[in-house]
Image (cartoon, rainbow, N blue to C red):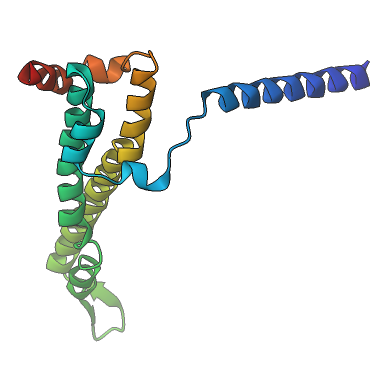
Length: 169
């Protein structure tokens, strides 16, 4: 009984994996490497066939640029923050031989640690946004749109996309 359940389970997994691979093979759109490494203007000239495609291109680039600016304005600070953190931890040894920290060093260390964590958080968020709205994803979205699929609801219902769409008309 147990062996037959295991065999049925493995057979089900094999069929589901095979079905998954066949679906991916049908949906696969080949994108050449240099096809998506073009500027906003070139995207608009090459793929901006109607209002929605131009709005989608402008939406992606309006999301990419602030994320890139935030990432590069924050990322250089991460290697710098540990130096004030380390220098602010002043350790002094009293006559009894015990090691103690000054209150100012402790407060300063907490502040610098919070700034370091905030900087890492901002850089991670900006990098995630930059990757989420990459040119390669834009090109795959445009290919899906031109093949008859609609623009995803998360994008088409956003205020920024609607504003860009109104601006284009």
